[in-house]
Image (cartoon, rainbow, N blue to C red; front, side):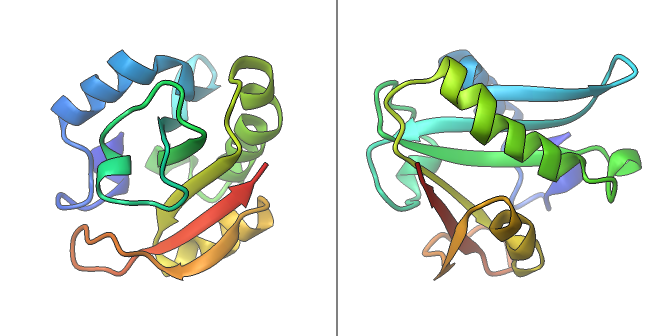
Length: 144
């Protein structure tokens, strides 16, 4: 699903995705429609208060910052509000019930997704220092 939501330069490799699931399975949440995974959100923890190249790949189990590396929705389920619902549930319910010690949530996104994340309670901090692919990324942050 990651490869369907990002360009080849942007998507996490199968090796990266297996690593993320192995070390931070508790930070991945799927959204199902009729028993089929329609979307997922995944994160890893870091000690960096902003997104860095390293915070995107290295999981620190007790890190105080959660880096959301993917909010992915299968193409047939897009434009139905699923990403917003999943993101809200992840932040407002799932993390609070299952994860302790996180005080900041960071993510990067393309400009056309900034309004989605702002509606969900994130603040856009401007252009991210991360380079993935050809498009620019924006860093969004939520202080819990």
